[in-house]
Length: 228
Figure (tube, rainbow, N blue to C red):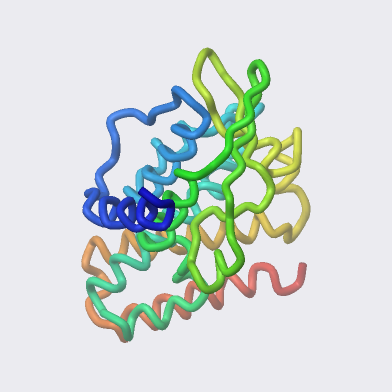
């Protein structure tokens, strides 16, 4: 069976995998951990997605809710807006409707992950996904990092190393300062979560209601950082 056929077959199989949260992520090997992270994101399961990661402050800073949760919150908002208001509502989301967080993009990344190379040295590992030209642009891809993904073995389980991914040994420092990108992204995520709650509660019944509330929240967010 040639490589292109295997990839196509995998894509067909993945298309019929229900987006349900696993009872527990598979952290038995580096590749299994990355696959579990992708699957948890597709299932919109933030807790299972976070379980695939380690960070030296045990997430006391809340950085994983932003670094990992932003994709899931974007997916949830895009899905509920699409169901309630169709394409007209989706257009209002602008850059919050992320093509690289779609099911298609996650499935594509799983295809590439199936061909990944893994280097293991004691309690550390690297997963090198063979991204190709056009990936991330012509072919939407989720979590497309050209550099290797670094993992660490923690109590016998392989976990993605968030400190290396974020480039800091002090996660709380990412939120320090008046208008750091991480602060803005944290607030953006909270706005999206608020909109999701309102939509789920049925308080935004029409696309006009949604547009007004979205614009009001975005305007308030911009004003918060305008002078910083």
